[in-house]
Amino acid sequence: MIIDKINEIKDTLQSLEIGNMGLHYLVDLGKESQQKYPEEDRVEENFIHGCTSYAWIKQINKDPIEINTVSDSVIVSGILYLLEKVFNGEPKSSIEDLTGQDIIDGFGLEGTISSQRLRGFAEAVKMMKQ
Image 1 (cartoon, helix red, strand yellow):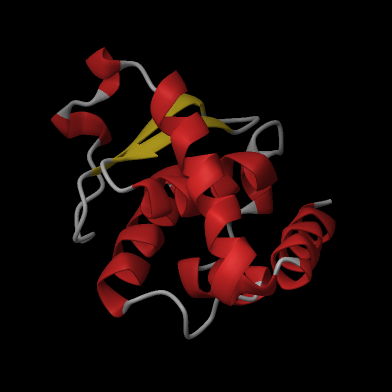
Image 2 (cartoon, rainbow, N blue to C red; image 1 turned 60 degrees about the vertical axis):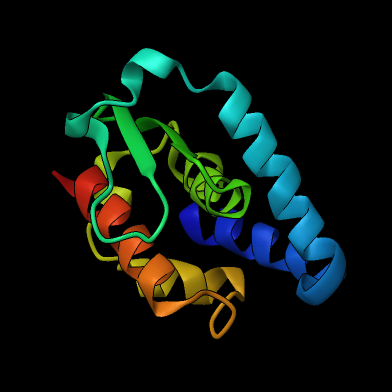
């Protein structure tokens, strides 16, 4: 269930104390994301507008959801990768009632993500809903 996956990520980040080890965790996820995202998928169709970093989300399948994400920023890549961890394999209906802010808050990252990055994250969620 989606809420269980979101809570699991929140618990992981809280156990790592987001101010220190949690950031390293996001960086590690971001590096993993950057290594596996194909260069040929970094196209306008997949570009996430509104983020300060260059970021992409490739919808491989709409229902069930299967996405691949990346950014030129490892932290942003890590945050976007959390979307993959939560939603890949889930029905499209699982995201319909959620906003980017809901998900960020669920991860326990409220107040730690800049408004520009949050706009980009919210845009990625919006793109998943299309």
